Length: 193
Image (cartoon, rainbow, N blue to C red; front, side, top):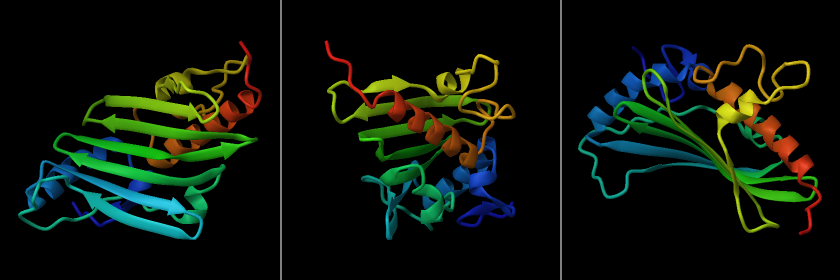
């Protein structure tokens, strides 16, 4: 198996299924002598930065990145002001996350999305949306978002081909962006008590 920073065996990480990442993640962690590696890339218009977080752990070997490659124009669409893309490697699990500020139609919200996969299943699924005009954040899962349907029975945010638990990172971000756009439109006017 060939692991490059942005692809595995020639398949771009953002296009691969999550179960493909489990063994390379173990190999990378074993080579570095670490229990986990948190990788983040920050995007803001005209600025991008990449870094690792390993907390108090000290690597005893080489640290190799394995990260979905995004260009600013791809990831900062859909009203994101700035965001962190996170791809965390653990023994037996990988976690993809997006944290940032999304603003649409005068609704500015902090968004935290995390989806974790083991070899066979989803082990973590959470979307937290905090509209800055109200105190309490709302929580939903990607599974719930994908279950929303139009009256016709067609998926509202996902494609008919999308299957929860076996989507790649590109599809995940598209579903999330569609949901956030709709969420902002529905919350333009605050209800008064």
